[in-house]
Image 1 (cartoon, rainbow, N blue to C red):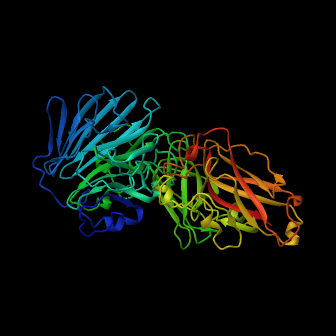
Image 2: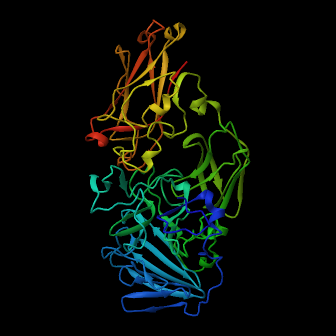
Image 3: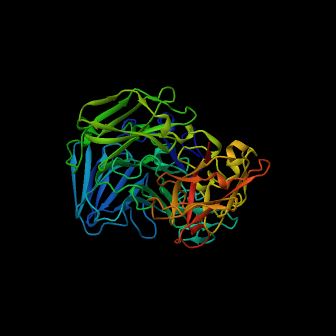
Length: 563
């Protein structure tokens, strides 16, 4: 369920807020800076000896450890939500001994946590049921950049793809992927969503909602299509995440600097106010708080593009900005390709136009503080979109995803062994009308290597050499395709492209580095009898990986034989 329905919800299992839901979410239960006035006579903080105790003057009281900066308590309307298995909410798995200070500036209370070179902040605003968080990671001395909100058990339902019960479900992979008695699979990785798809993640009972509203991810890595765990739930409790760098399926180096705010928001059961969403949130009230690395709105710029020509209008286009320090993105308007990105840190960026998730055009853009960089219409060269190449046949289409292939949709929220998955084996006949839907989204050395594609050629086509292209979106354990044609011609083994080194295909993500393998097939490989089917065999080769779905594998974008 999307979490955008403004009607009352009854024991809603979970809510994942999408970018498209912003308008509807704004009409849900009030939770943000634009919420109705709340009596805040008790706004302030105290010291209980071990923690700073912050009362927002609304319905929320939270505590921060004076020793290590952990969030040790979240009490909303008298109910404690924080904590499971004796664990607190914190950066990574906890920072250890830190210097923790607190100050009040008018209607804002700021808790500052210093741990080595890392700085972390909690802020409360008078009359709001929110906790605002910033994290400034200066280097790799802390392994990852992850904040986890740990929630007590039995407060919210436990029945979703990222939920499991370890008392009844069996572990099938790496201690974090589970199979239920009915054969369906669950894991903390199975969120379904890319970063661009959601504004918040959380849970609702219908009368209480608890969410993490994500930041703009300007210091994260992986771009708009990155997939990562967003939350988990089991019989012992639940967790909500803001992950900026996790080390899993990362396609870019880690970025350092201040990220935030991201927000822990309580509501009366509905979605968080859209005023908290990263595209809408204004924090001028934080400008003078002394947050390390903080850049005001006036110190940022904007990029606006008039439009994009050369688009395939059957696909959504996204424009991204990236350099070693920051990343941003915006959707291109379907009518003309207009796009805009605000709040951009000054600097020179690589601008990439994505068709679906496939980069089809790049350029350089410089952004200045307090100014708008206006770009003339961008034209995507026809040769940059591989779909424009003339093909004898094509399976799928070039969009940087395995969309349309067999089991592709299921793989963002289930393990490949899930009982809902169609058989990963089976061959493909060109001209059958089901070429794409019968071709598996993923190929593994130990599961379905040796897949066969049958196709006929005309006499003229069989008399010429042709190029076969196989586009992939990621690979596990250096899995890559080697092809054989009619058992008479075999390609060399291609070199493996650079891909993430962690699990991907089994943990809900096909996102890696899009890459195209090209094979020059000589005319001598084809059958001269035009009534017979040529047979293309696709094998997955690699000397690494283990067995089954953890053997070397790859995710398919498109396959075609060029004229």
